[in-house]
Length: 281
Image 1 (cartoon, rainbow, N blue to C red):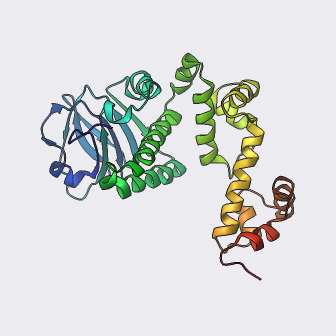
Image 2 (image 1 turned 180 degrees about the vertical axis):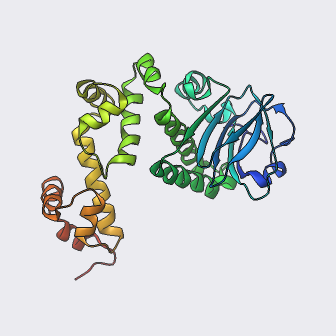
């Protein structure tokens, strides 16, 4: 990764002038900038135009655009920035940045759903946690993964992301979007058709993509995600099996227990007894 002094950063808007040179001047920064507003609108200059971002907006700004941040009292916004050299570890990363529709326009704005707000906020909080450690090798892969997830979140909201997937003809990209959608919707939606429809491909094409990229069918991946999340909750929480079943979208505890037993080889109760730490009698 680059050793430039301003190759990566994430800060609240009210302190950005302490970290980003000439933050309050309208200049071109050669940085990929991603903004996440909180519960109040926020104004800034993009080029010569003043833009107001609504609350809970995710924004992606082209690195060729001039930007100027405006101090605004109690209105706060998360400002994430990085250089192309910082993010691009592989040629695929470079292709993603240069060809992604997120940065084709001057600015792309997306109003987040409740699920999107929670997901984006979790990613932002993780970025803050490792912000000052990113030059340590142990954190570099984690940081790259978090940046990638922020970019993929925008691709999910972007109406042109399907065109990008098709133009790439990439089973890996399609499979990656499928898994990100699973993280957002699994508790409510478990049918392959639902995810294929969201990606605007046929169930057959989605199946072919995941088989080639991941060696599994979409149905197998869905079941794997359900069982992994169930295992995590059984091991790390005190929730009842009925509560865990409900959180995963199963109103009938017996249906959940039957699926878990079939996939894991033992009932949720037995799995919890074997894997809780400290073990329970």
